[in-house]
Amino acid sequence: MESVVQSFFVSLPQAAVLWLVILVAIAVSAALVAWPPKAPVRPLTEAQADAFRFAGEVAVAAERAAATAVRRRDEWAAAQRESDAAWLAFDEADRRARETELAAPFPLMSRRRKPGENADRERYLHRAATAACRQRDLSIVQLNDVLAHRGWNPRLHPVVQERLLRSAARAHRQAQFEKARERELATWHESELAAEALRTLRAEAAAALVRAGVIGQPVADEQWFADQWTTTELPAMVKAAA
Image (cartoon, rainbow, N blue to C red; front, side, top):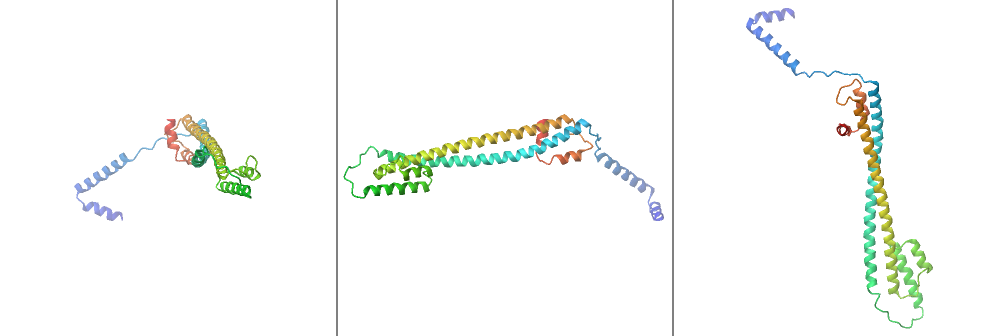
């Protein structure tokens, strides 16, 4: 093999060999210039290692807080939808109650009641109240009061009974809306607390990185450090800390 190489160079003119050597030297020089210099690696001090470990622990807590914040926000969104639906139901019940109240000033014709008419009025009241309860316009407690005639006169005219039933439905829907509104406010408060806890943990983790004093500098345990931060939000935390 060496004899072949020697015969090859001997066969070449001296000027061609010289140019070949120059080209090889230029290529090697260009490669050395383009190769990025390796940054010096510094070992972690004990304080920096403690800061990194603390930042990793806080990062894990921040991940859990993020999941909690998402869950609390979903609960608030669900409570908000329930509140909106309760308001629409109350608005409809209020409209229907006001319609019957407009007819209240008109007197009813007074006449002698037929035999069995009181029983018919009672059955009408019971059927109307049961239907309203099935439609969730009345609560079970209100229905029991109607059936037991607690605060309800079954001998009243059906028009009067209808007006009273719609007023009771409006009161029930208003109570439902107020409860839904309270749940919405409570879940919103919990969502804000969870979001604030998440922001605090992220800021604390970023501050721990700053206290380590090696952000942006290569360290001996950079692989260990990378393993501690599996979240994609670490760059944002570092920027916020900086």
